Length: 359
Image (tube, rainbow, N blue to C red):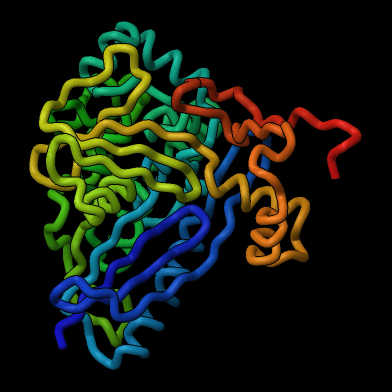
């Protein structure tokens, strides 16, 4: 039987599936990972944690299915910066999509490029704290010795593709969320110069669904020479998997973040910058997206701080006994700032509405 493996490099887990030639899921594997928050508003991960989890998931799928897949495709979290030196070693923990430390750098980039209106017209979005480009400038400002070692940058899924194949590349859907790829699908020299990035540091651009290379990593000898397909940004890939292929198609996704994705054939941005515009994984299509930064991440946060001894099932049982509306208690889930509709990296989570009635 012909099989294909799919890998998703998430924020709280690495997930893998095995599907047959008709797309039916025949097996799955998951490995939980953690996010580091060393300071308020910061969020980062060691890329080696992703790689170790991917290795475990791939080995589990390969051993349980007793066959070598015809190909492996990789998708992953958007925006997060992976910076490598000339040896291909990670120089700093990956600064994640929900990290908010770059507010000052966003303002500087926007001002030097000519203002937010010009930025949005050129790239489809404002320069936001979660995007990739300002993270580079933050390293230049705050970790100059580390910044000087950087020879290439990439996104999380691209790091896994590189580890598997040795090829340094990204796809258009992920690149469109960096503040470096313009709406015509080209990296912009001027904005990268503002951030002090050498144009030679850019990964090669490959269309989603193309083969990037073949597995060469010695720790995966059982999968040697299997083709590795460059997938796409997680929101774009999951939207396509849900059938978002034509204008009018839309998807709501609840993961670590929560998103609403709607396909468009026109690369026309929201002039106010309130709704994102990114490239889809299909040809020259685009999609609009709205995002709340802490969706299931809010549940993970609550469980780790207040319900560590409880399983998710036990938490769900408690929720079932609680009336809708929680008798007036309201939670604003801005644990890592917010993007839509409140574009504010300094927004913070709030619980209010308590009285002596509440348990």
